[in-house]
Image (cartoon, rainbow, N blue to C red; front, top):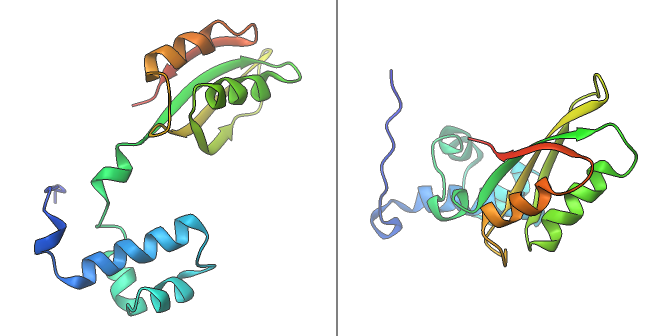
Length: 141
């Protein structure tokens, strides 16, 4: 069965969906240590959380995170320089996934929150391309 997504005003949804979003936000922010604590704080049953957690997303939050795909030279400080460039643009690093270097270079995927950036994504990528240890950088899809 093909998944179908709808954009719906939160005001017309049953409370259970908003509570699931609240629990997910508590977990993501670290305010809740685990699902039990998050569901308790959101006044939601754990079974309802597990039933809907993979089906409910906040459209506003999902638009604010991009993936930066880069190939970096296998040199000390290469990843640090890339992360510093993202930070200098006002981006906030969410996750980092780096592969083992092969043939003198390593692939890196960095999830970046963009809602606080002072530059456009393209301007940030252009600045990152100019770094000496960056072989290639692009926005992931």
